[in-house]
Each structure stands twice: as C-alpha cells, then as structure tokens.
Image 1: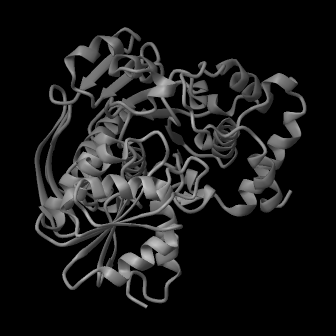
Image 2: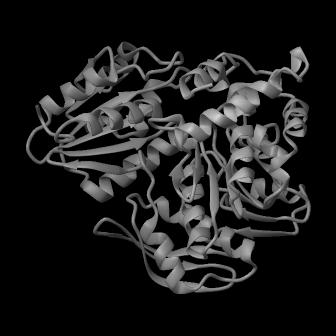
Length: 440
C-alpha cells in the first residue's frame, strides 16, 4: 500500500481517541495486543524501553528524555501521542518523524498479518500504531525506546513492553469515564506500567498515592522532592534557567530551551530517568546539551513575534491552570489577550475557561476542534459570556484564527489553547502563511 491507502486502512479500525465516552467503559483486553505482538515476533522485547505515563507532561517528558539519551550517543526511538499535524510525528527516531515510505511499509505489513487474528480480536487504531512503532524501532534498529502511554497505563497497548525505567509525571482527574472517578483509581491504572524490580521515577508527590505505586514492586522509587528536585526555576530569554538535584548529582545554571515553569518538572523527571537507565549521573556538559536542544511543539510555543502568537494545548483543568500561570509569568499578566479556544466534549467549559484565565481576556474566539468529539463553539462562547467576557463563536479553527489576528491590538497576545486538535490545526495554518502569524 502507499501511504494514503495505508492510512485509510488504519482509519477503518476502532479509534478510542475519537470516541466520546459518556459512561464507564470496560477495560480493554490486553491479550489482544499480546496476540498481535506474538505474530510480529515481539519486537518490543528486542530493545530496552523507558515507559512514560502521567496526566500532564508525558509528551514533553518523553521528548526531554529522548534528548538526554541522545546526548550520551544513543540512537533513540520515541513513541508519543497525540500528533499535532501529521501522524508520522508519533513515531520518531532521534527526534525525526518516521518517513512516509517507512510508515506505509510497516502498516502494510500489519495489514497482512491482521488476517491471522481472530475476528473478535481485531486490533484498534492505537494498538496498530503502537505495534508499528515497536516494529520500526526493532527494524531500524534503535538502541533504546522512549514510549509514552496512550491512556492510563495498566491496560494500555504500550504495556506489552517491559519498561526498565517507568516514569509517572503526575496524577490528576482526566479521562475519568475510562480510568475511574478518583485520583486513587487513576493512580492504580498508571501504576500498572511499573514492572517488578524496575526503577520508578515518581513525579507525583501526594503521600496518599505513594503506596499504590510501591505495591507494584519496583526495585527502587525515586520520588520528586525527596530524591530529586528543581532547586531553582527562573525565567530566561527563550526558556528557563534551572538548578537541579538528582539522586547522583547537582546541576546549576542549566538552560532549558522551552517556556513554562512546569517544563522544569518534566525535564527533571527525564533527567532522573536517564540517570536510572545508565546507572550513573550524566556529565554536566551533556545535561546542558540535552536541555538546550529540547523542543515541545504546541506547548507554550511562540510561533510569531508580531503580533505575539503563542500555542499552548491544555486538555484538562490542571493543565489549564499551569498554562495560565505560565502565560502570566512569561508574557505579563497585564498584557491584553485575545484567546482562541476549542474543547472536546466532556469538558466543563466554564471550569476550563476559568482555569485558563479567560476572565482576563479582551476577547475569546471559540471554535470546534477538528474532531468528532468537538464541543460546539457556541457552548464554549456562552460559558465565556457568563463570565462577563466578550466571546465570538466561529465555525472552524481557520475562521477563529483569522478573526483573532484581525482583532489583536499592538502589544497584545494571541493565545491558541484548549484541545491539541485546535493547537495542531492552528500550527499548520500559521506555517502555511507567507509570514506566519501576521495580519493579511
């Protein structure tokens, strides 16, 4: 198959990322993924895996960890989700997305093998992508894989791998219809990636959740605040300036080339995971190299200076609170703001808008994310108006972005936020402009 045919075949499979779940669903059956991986020859068992989960920060942590491993000279495969613009972004080798011909080739192979699977055990869209990633990493080959969980952990398709190091960034209330109604339920799901005898890097500091992770039997738990910490986290031109403490070393004056104070926590988890993997601290010059090379598209990403346009996906209330805090610190709490916001269904629009700091915006332009799960733009606009904010609903991300760029005044900020589907679409549109982010 060519790439178009391969992607059309993939899209004929159940895609939980696109299904609006309005009730507690039964946990997926991991035996289906294990059976399919058996047919592939279990490529996930041919290389060491570092496994990443958490409510927020998974992708940024995975990218930072990739850079830390690359700084030591390793070839690194990275599997993340969702993608912003192209599906290839989910499967990277040394930071570069999988080539079209490679993706078409591996999906064609999976399509051939699928006929050997029992009809009732047909793999899902995400399971096939996870299988494609493991196969690609084994065939390339890479030295190590950084694998981000799609959702939860215990029942996730990526959990066919045995992570030598597991990373849990944090635990918050998200996907409760699938993972459970409380943080304790969600912690149990995320703890499922922890393998007996492995090292767990635990960014979640709630003492009430600690024993849930300890019960999985890791050989060691490196806990944020106890075993490692961000000692200093200051704003700098183009990023953050950090002092870091790990179980084996201290690092001062590390420049991290991404915006947002929360990125320091993600980088600390990544650095500690790399230390656990190598069994020793990284050299200071390699830490500096890794931190300076980190990129996290769609997360507090400045894509234009005139006018100032910032993309920052925030899929849940904890992420929205972090986003609002970072925008205020990085760009000024008093700066005039025009916000472009779109949300998926299942979110409380008033709660999300309040967390995003929309009450301080001069204008909120709402739009539906390009997804079947989109929340109507008018509903989000009504929630903004109830907060006393001027709000205008639009029919698409393009329409919303054009209106925002027309309305933004001198010295003001355009913030594109909410669903990553909105952020990704806006990023594509801005890249297609002759002068990205400027008025036309």
